[in-house]
Length: 326
Image 1 (tube, rainbow, N blue to C red):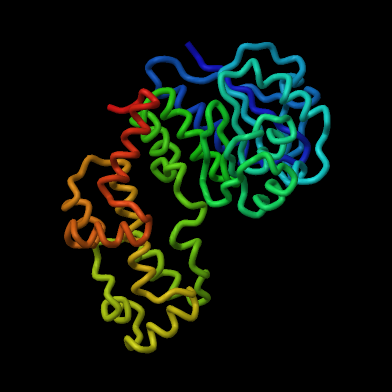
Image 2: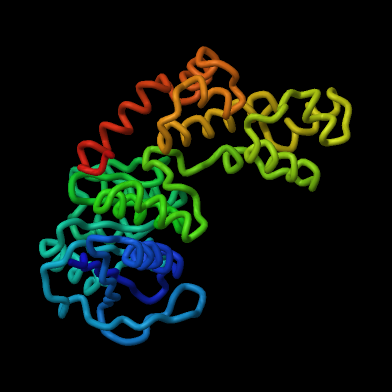
């Protein structure tokens, strides 16, 4: 049996907020053995709906004409909803929400959910650029500005743009299990299902973008090869600089010393392995370039304020509560 997903759009919506989740649900439908998803696009009025940068999609039905029940109501984002909101859009979402098993938003779509009263007393996230405005306009919402997505009861919200893909993968994992979500991610050639509690900013994004091409290449090498020789002497040789000059240039351009950047990158690699594999801690430590479980423990505690074992247990407990742990 297919799960019915209605995606609400409006003039000026962010195209990837729609395309990303729609492709996730569509790919899951091709791979799922126990039914996939039926995706419908709705708007205040049926017909062409222009995205923020020109391309239009066709809404097959009006929001007030969508008949229930439905599995998921998903509201996309766009700059158009960070200003005055169309009352017909807000009213349509508010009226349709009770017919849905769960409600979700991508990016600034959270403004529509908040205006519809669906986020009152709940935790939510949105694009980091809009988080402060969301909190100011809706003080009854606890805005967590540094999360990829947040689940609070039957309401899910996600950060900006590509985070909608992470949100949709999380919904697929909840419905069909993490194995299918991983297969969908591989099929779409995207990251293997980032956890919702992860920061909107990865290690490369938290650092300043380096101006010099050799440092950009070196940054990519560090993040792709955590088990390599990432010592200052090794990195300096790879960059063709003296150690002293390399440390000074790296820190000046990325805003963080090389050793600290490497530690953050390795900690993120460890977290991904803890969430997506059953590797013992000694193997996780080796594959992430941290050498031993003791070093893994110290680095993980320093970066995430939790032990590696506790993080894995919490992640697995979340899977068990959702009924998808295998």
